[in-house]
Length: 517
Picture (cartoon, rainbow, N blue to C red):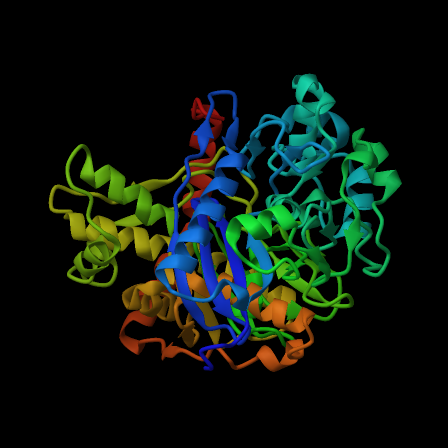
């Protein structure tokens, strides 16, 4: 790699906080920082983050990276943002937040969404939900955990915020506006708003009929652009503050789903990746729009303006291990990730009979139940800390396997290999557990924690016409883990237990709701 190669300033805004990196347009991460932010939970279902804090962290990290890495700021030719979606940042005409970000965990809008589209058909008014599914591929969450529920919460409960607001923006579009000064969105970045007719991806407008159905005004929604567009140049004030060139371009923001597909090298049809991040999902490009409403799987606007990606969501992925870290630490020393996974390796496959269901914040796919909660099963006085850690890792993998069988049915074919990325994929033990549980070859993407940062840099290179999207395939080949014959039967049997555990636990959750619902 040339020492003078052009760079992308890549931002990956996860739920846990932003990663900021300097990445070549060939996808090589030269320097990066990882930061954490707090989610503020309220007893009424609120779950918010400070969007201004994101911006401060990102700008300060960028300045530090340019100094400590001794990389010439003039090499930064593009800025691209990926990250969490299904969240809402209210901003003024200048893109400055008028209130906190309502994250995808915020359920305060549930009652307003149910008033708008609720009914007896799987919790929906059949006539209304079928209009949404037919046009968008999905439908508003009756739990309120999406931009429709969030915007309705602001409309009904925070009119002072609405009065000061020009745009309701997804986090990636908000950050794109902070860099460029221009409001924009794409079919992809607004996928969880369920407000675009995704049968026609080159129609860049919101669907007025769907907006009227839920009582929202299109004037608050940013203009739509094609996926992978150059929005504009970095504003002079931001360029000068960061020290980068004023003619550096800003690429339209994309969800982490799309960045993961590109960063994993899975850009061709049916090339599959599995994200083991705070949340988890299984995704591949598919040729047409389709919906499995029973298991919350759909195809949504994809990596080009005429293609789709499979979307689904499991609310707790590697976050389950982070949760256990804190529980085990109490007020003492927290084991780090490597220590946790090393300890887990001392327990045998099957964790000496201990099972873990990872539904810490409810679930979306293959079942949609926000009241559901996690738990250990089959604990005994002989259960060890190693058993608990391994059980968490195995439980998360089993949950993915439960979803995976429906994803393969959705795709209409066997999906293999599975490219594993995200913070949890840094563990070779977890990769092997996934291979054994899925019964498929699992490929550990290189630098799995940074896959999305690599993905948006590669998208920037496509936008700048340095390469074509299909040329990304195969760039991220990693270590392959094959299913172990000795463990396969055990893991298949344990994964098969999840539906019965779900049937048990959903009854408990209904009778004994968590106070944070």
